[in-house]
Amino acid sequence: MHTMTTKQALNLEIQHLRSLYLSAALTPAQLVEQLDAAIGNDDPGHIWIRRLSKAEMFVYAKRLESLNPADLPLYGIPFAIKDNIDLAGFPTTAACPEFAYTPEKSATVVQQLIDAGAIPVGKTNLDQFATGLVGTRSPYGACQNSFDSEYISGGSSAGSAVSVAKGFASFSLGTDTAGSGRVPAAFNNLVGHKPTCGLVSTHGVIPACRTLDCVSIFALTASNAKIVLSVAQGYDEADAFSRKLPISPESKTKTTFTFGVPQANQLVYFDNPETPGLFDEAITQLEAIGGTRVEIDFSGFLETARLLYEGPWVAERYAAIREFFEAKPEALFPVTRQIIGGATKFSAADTFAALYRLKDLQRSNAPIWKTLDFIVTPTAGTIYTIAELAAEPVKCNSNLGYYTNFMNLLDLAAIAVPTGFQKNGLPFGITLCAPAFSDEQLLNLASQLEVAAIQQGKRTLGATGIAQQIDKS
Image 1 (spheres, rainbow, N blue to C red):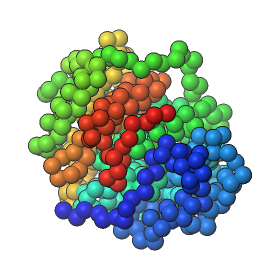
Image 2: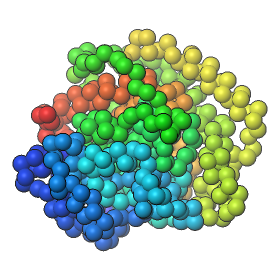
Image 3: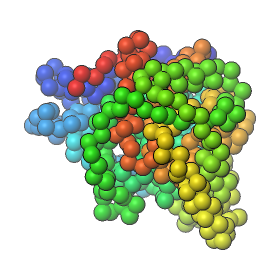
């Protein structure tokens, strides 16, 4: 086992930093100094595609000097950006050097975060064109797990997750089409919130499947994710897929709730001997905070999941980069080229047939929500070493999407929450999902789970080893 050794990690939890700023015990410029030293100049884990220099981060810190920390919800909070999301003046590569361009404007969501006081730290490594759940499909190197360098980080938002887990950013932006904002969260002991599609603008984001893409948030805690989402969300006229948040009554934290769990024969762990027990423990944790478990038939969700890569949605990935793909196919990472290139076998008629099947599945899955508040699954049934992944890249990747691929097709919001560790020290987590615009309820439930774990001394921040404190705000 190759455990990554790091210097004493920084505690970048948002409320912790806020308290330091508000008491004048820390300035953004001082934080940049500390962060630059902590990250260093080496990148053995292949986290970054382009890290901002100390001078470049100082530009953002300097701007905050004349402002009051109390007025900005993310004052001096460092964040990382998946490199398929634009940051003005820095190249966007989507992990394909020949595709790179330098945007004049930041993506809407990035600009909103900067306006709220956040400081960008860098653009992070990803599975090329956000195609994969593994974090190894990049010419910039296979991103390594923050707990054990022999294991995958998860993807496609690989560097985004690892940068937060290692204490290099308070939060990060990923994207999530098939699980890219949840699988890396599970593998790095983080909260990964996949918002309702359209809740956070995708303007300035390179599309994967544009009808399904959303910008996701990696955070050290559920309450941190909630703070970031409150800034990141909002209707954007520039994004044709943006949706207005319906006005709903103030959502109270539920003291009791009903959650669905797939039937035993539908829970798959891909021969991992430990994760079934860890999932059972997580169910017990949910019951302890007021949950009632109901076994559900998960087959409709699984059939929906298969549509994503076995059906014509892969053609949407082709459409997103068609001109580039046809001009320079050799510029793509081999397994990425194989997957996206496979799209050409689908006809327009196949696409309509799949859309009709999806409509049927959406309709047949809908009644389940009449009796449930949430559905709970493992985020991933197992985790692989980088070597295991290299031996069977497509099969392993497919296994990682078993519990994630249906979410956006069924218009669900979801949150990945850490709930335990395997004996080898690698994290395990569950995903809670519910219909569109249930984001606040999901975040509240994740916070309740966290509080219970903190009280038992069982919650640490990412891979830093720092014990999580109960949020008093």
